[in-house]
Length: 454
Image (cartoon, rainbow, N blue to C red):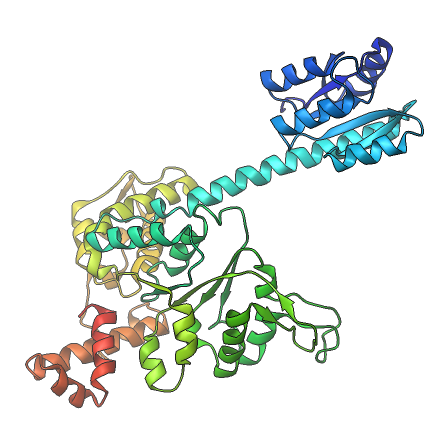
């Protein structure tokens, strides 16, 4: 059972202190002092969860003591005690930061309710602060794991932009950690105590994305029975993360551009302009410049979101990071499963290092999670790993994609990689000839080569 919350009662009348101690001692650790100076000493000496403070005190008066308490710790709730009918004093105390006031003579039941509410709010604020600090630590760029040169450049960029409001565009293949990088940017110096609101533009149908972003008014369409705030409004004062922005429909792109330009928008079905202050971080696994050439993405919007671009490397291009990533996943899932794995067998590690990881870090994490579950005797060995890693095949349209266990999107990527490698081999690594063989533009081929690290 946890320790009781600690309450400091400040009153120069011994009888009042005794009465309050009698009312509260069952549920709280009550400390009684007779002056404002003594109360301040208690606050400086140790943990205090609430102060019951009398209006009339010798020396440092009630209001003066309240002001000094708030200077020491503005999160400590202070309940003022005042003589019956002293409304003006009570209003002044509330304005100066008092949580509430109670009138003498006390109603014990009312007093208990006011104290309980104040202490609960204090405890909740502590929990929120703890969770926020854990969240900040979790998404700190220091926890984006990797020692490779490519990752060192990513760390430098994240560190440079995290305490600014410049728009950031994060690019990279699926599974490379784009949202993790976005959160690391957000939970930097200036933005760590404000909202981070993500939205996946590819996961929401085009006709619903606008209302998800900007919200809607009651009666805007059939089924709109209440007002709904959109992601933009919820992110006011913080960061809006537009994941997979390359999949956004053109009409929504136009409305997003207008919002970014002047910081105002209207909810769907609304007439009133709403102004917010939002930082934009975007991410995509597509080549935005190629989308612009194809008429699928607005060039003016691209310029607005691309203040600084951070390209996340594929896992295949940073294989020296695989062992430390594996260690981190083992630590993570051992916590969940009870220290099940101690090490990785050397043969298993060789297979993990030689595999090309089309799903990048996301695929590596799921592989290690399943390997931990399947492991025996505290070791991940070759029998713990999936067949696609133990017996890799050159994936083509005809030789095993359908039995690979990979999701559809990754099967397509593996097929593209195989075809591109074949065309480059046949053309003597001449990219122009390879593009003709593949019947695709040279620009698109170059994008694919870069994307897959070929």
